[in-house]
Length: 269
Picture 1 (tube, rainbow, N blue to C red):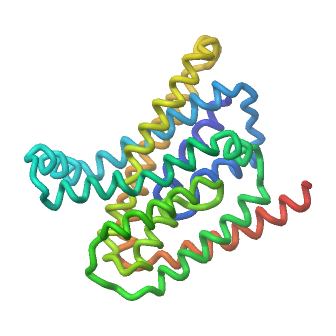
Picture 2 (picture 1 turned 180 degrees about the horizontal axis):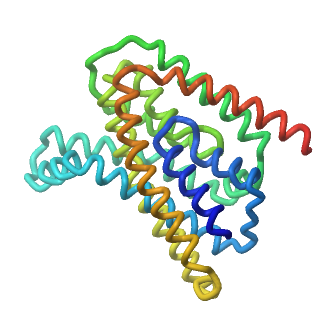
């Protein structure tokens, strides 16, 4: 991978991991536009691990106070608000874990330049954001049932083109949850999953350790810092946008990019 490509893809990952426009879909579109060719599976995995670790680290830094409070609540060994919130996050992870483990091979095939699929999924993301933008404001917190439903949305968002943050925040808002609480839950619920996926991918990379010797570290470093710095800014910006009920603006973007992707997919098919 060229250093410039790594920088662009890192910026895309940093932005789209938090903004509700689908990081997986935009990464696939970015590779197609740049003509980036990562023939080696382990090399592709390594780059994915690096940029996802960068955005996970961004999330931890932005929500560091919340994470400290959650750990304090857990270590008090009481059924307090922090402990309940943590277990709701665990509950929300179950659907994505099940789908990821049972359909891993099938899902991998969807990330092989499926531009047409990405386009249609972006349209669905746009529709979710549009509806969430029109939802009424409430002060309701995330219930146990809500956590499970939001978890199902996160599992569906494994598909390229469905925004994870867009799907989970929109679902939470449509369920009547407070927008700020919806954003907080959405961003924190994905951190354990990201680190679990990183650990799994690293094991695969270790099995094919020949890639470690052949891959240039410069693109990895550039991709990491691009994703990390942009991720910090995008996460903070997204929290502000959710609170101000500005999600519907992103729906128009998803509609536009989705249509372009569909046209490109049809033309190139």
